[in-house]
Amino acid sequence: MASDFEKMDKARSVMVKMAEGINPVTGEQIKDESFLNDPRIIRCFYYIAEVLDNVMNGVYSKSNRPAQFVITPEQKSMVVLPDGLIGVTEFSKQVNMCTDQTRSKKLTAVELNKRLKKMGILGEEVNPATGKARTVTNSKSKDYGFEMVRRSFNGNEYEMVVMNDIGKRYLLDHLEEIMSIDIS
Image (cartoon, rainbow, N blue to C red):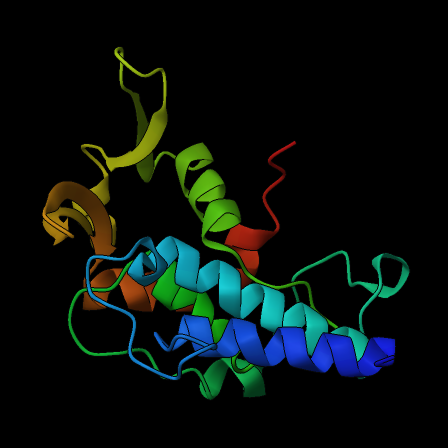
């Protein structure tokens, strides 16, 4: 019988293949219309793969997870943000690539958005039909480099909050201040 380590390694491998759009059974590319190509599902697969990797390396447990986000000036100087408009998820991903995950809690788009809403830079809108809330821009957003754009995924159109170069610079320059805001 396979050891727990071997099972976790196999599970991690399967998650990475699916996140990369590859059928782990056949090795073929997953078709475009599959729900497995949804960015939200892909992020979940990468997250699960990372958790499994951390568990296998002995650096992940609830008891030793950092409670606060920490970034040093040196780490901050290493952050490279893509050109053009990006969302907070991409911003967070690029920042997390430069932080020490053994000393810092991961930066998440959800926590970043909550703080930006509390600061009045972004807003929230509730769909009356579904009751679901979503993050939107407001009258102050443009001054901070945030805007709404229309995107399409699998034939479904939606609006997304993105940041331009002004927004990217603002977030990076004020990241520690923003992340110190209490959202409880």
